[in-house]
Length: 274
Ligand code: KMH
Ligand code: ZN
Image (tube, rainbow, N blue to C red; front, side, top):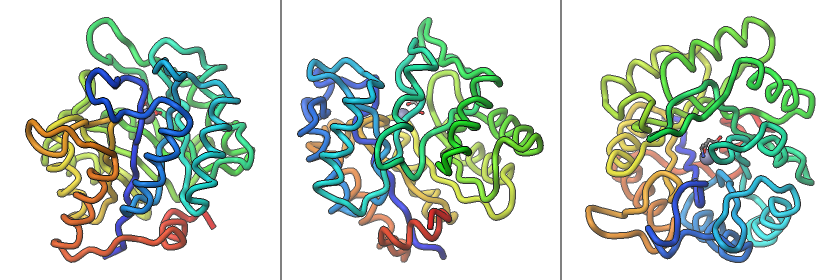
């Protein structure tokens, strides 16, 4: 089986230090969390950034400072900035991280609008998706296709036919988000069976669903995403002290299941980044 690529979603936009004091806010904290995750086996850092007080931001200068800090600590890691940002941000704000220097190899592309809990709506209209895809394509940035539900795969296939999304595609299935697809074995199989042959996929899931769904993905040949953005706990009632503990747990599971971890260059090859 293909070697496993682990993504660490180290920060997110929603979780806070009140929920887990190890959630990184400052440039240095973000750099340390990225480095520890990389050393534990993560090959991709899915990056959101914060102001020092924890406020989520897509400010280009702040992203650049965090990317510079990460690259000075682990130059080989793949940085995958968020173009989703936080609920309520404008498209102009959200797209800013693709302009970091050097240009990112990948960035998220969220494939549809959805409820996001309470009164929150995560808005990604068809025209927004097309305009973000065009910006990424024109720069050679590979989109990670964020699918929170099956209909978002259908949107991806439609936009592929229209020429906005290229093969080979790389999907990230985010499961168990309020308003999205449930984190169940049946639903993961449905998602996997709905993507084009030759695509790669990664699986992440919220809270207690993270490790069961990631384990299933490892068994089925997919890749794995863990991190504070999705889950703050190492096990029931035990807060993770660092994202790296979550990565180490995936590495342990994967090794037990007989699947090796990709090196940075192997990860780039699997994702057709080179
Ligand atoms: N924070 C969510 C509203 C992404 O990174 O592209 C969106 C999100 C997806 O996290
Ligand atoms: Zn994200």
